[in-house]
Image 1 (cartoon, rainbow, N blue to C red):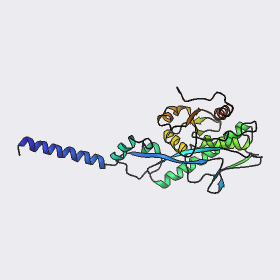
Image 2 (image 1 turned 120 degrees about the vertical axis):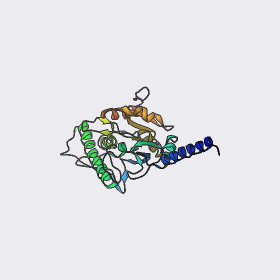
Image 3 (image 1 turned 60 degrees about the vertical axis):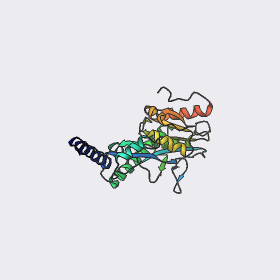
Image 4 (image 1 turned 135 degrees about the vertical axis):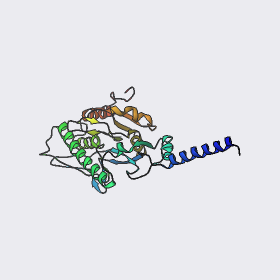
Length: 262
């Protein structure tokens, strides 16, 4: 074997070694998938998601579904082949691990953090809904129960569920119009809706579970359009009042906000 051939063989072996090492080395990413959805107007594990006492509630039709994503755990190893595969799939997304798990180093710490965020989200959703309806938390008690799902992104849908159960569209009709409507977004006590991330995967989860309309924080319109399932209509929102008005317009045939050009 000539010295040139020998050098080429060594170089090839080194390149292969580098590629194998890169393929096997864990990367600081998580792979996310469409997660579960839940109808906040219905039951979860045999218990109503929304229970209201101190005031008369309405019977509702249709569904308001909160959405979620599922991601590989903080301790899971994600490698180059996993990342490459996810890039070519519409039902997977590669996300920096720190953006999926911003706090905690193990599943217990993360679960505790997500549970606390969910609790805060439920409290602010209740305040936002009652503020919109001109009701006081002293007179109306709202209990929200949704097991095994954490984080703040269900705030908007919780608030809409409370409004629908107490007031509907204000004229004796359901906010849903009998439809299955899904959505996502944080909410504060004043009713402002915030971005959450993972919306392209959430629209897929929503369509899988029968939704035809998806309420999305306006700032995330572009992400939501990226892998929008066929038959899904996006409605951008920035506030609880805006979301209620959009659903009223959808039911009455009025002008409904669109993500086109957003």
